[in-house]
Length: 146
Image (cartoon, rainbow, N blue to C red; front, side, top):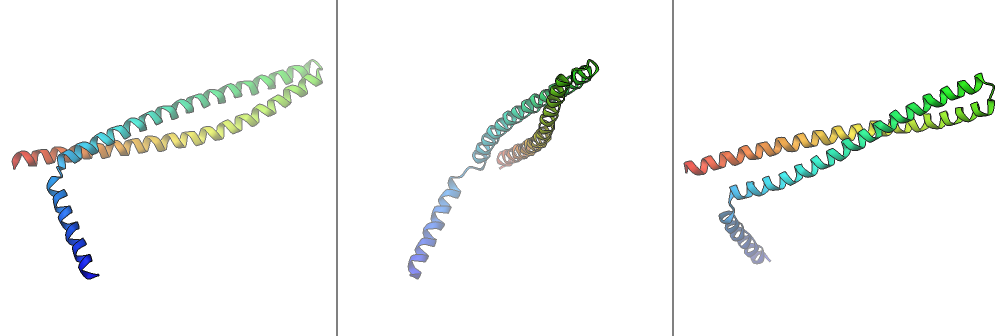
C-alpha cells in the first residue's frame, strides 16, 4: 500500500511541476480581469433593475398617498352633504389604501436595503478589480525588468 501512495505522490508532484512551468501569471491575471469585468456588468445591470424597482415603488407610494388624501376629502364632503353611505364607502376605501400604503412602505424599505447592499458589493468588486489591475501592472514591470 505504501508503494502506491508514493507513486501517487510522485505523479502529483510531476503534474504540478508541469503545470507550474506552463502557467503564465500575466495570462491568468488577464483571464481573472475578464471574469471580473463580466461580473461588474452583471452587478451594474442588477443595480439598475433594483433602482428602477425602487423608483416604481416610490411612485406607487406617492399615488397611494394621494388616493388616501382624496378619499379623506370625499368622506368629509359626503358627511357635510349628509351622504352617510357615500362617506362610509370613502372611509372603507381610505382604510384599504392606508393598508396598501403601509405594505408598500415596508417593501420600499426592504428594496432600499437591497439597493444599498448591491451598491456596496459593486464598490467592493470595483476595488478588487482595481487591485487586480495594479498587480498586473506590477507583474508586467517585473517581467520587463527581468
